[in-house]
Image: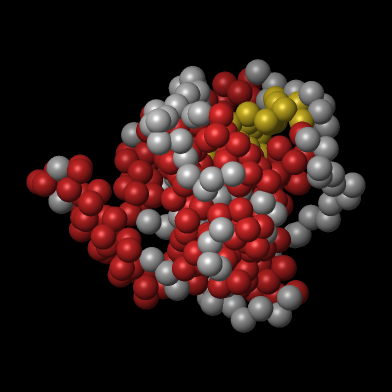
Length: 325
């Protein structure tokens, strides 16, 4: 298969494009990806695939109907519909009101709702939703494996509630670089009204090229993510655009997880590994509800969806589950 999209199919997917998407999805490792792309090494393969994947996924998602109601993705597992809703969890009044309206309606209709750790307290403390243990689990795993932690007071987090904003996890791990990056992105974003969105995007791309580390590419921490998070926090009807950003930015989970494990094993635990934990949690604990809602940070949505699809396809099962208190 030629490693290139169909040049004659800019706005829709050709059969060759679909085959290429399927081939990337079938890769279980960066070495698989290197063989597929014909790249000189796995580093080159990762970035080459990122570029192609973003274009192909953008066109694949553009062909789908826009979401109605609270945007998200649906995966049916054993007759149960799991909806994954990625949010900003920025704590704005706008997002709080928007989410409470939709989640309250879902609860009234008999849905079961699971939240990424920290989100229940932020938005749904008085509603009948369940908070998962994903952050405590990640911290416990990190301590158990003896990883050198960059997270302040990691052991205190194991038995305590997680930070209210999980975007803060990355900032805790690399605070100085992250603060500088965020300050730069804020400056570009806040002045975009003076020089327009197109110029802001161009400046943001340049800043991202200079400021992002190899680890940051594995967490999607670019200017576009920053801007779309800010926009969706102020206007939650734009959550769909934020979700699509992460769906087009992240390669399939095995590839992103291997990339991060090579560069920062603890960061891999507190980001993509938690996606697997949340999917397992929801599938294992749901018993009778035919509608299950998972409310997670938008960066987690593609990964949680990925693992739910593995359950759907019979490639994954969870026979037991030990909660982290």
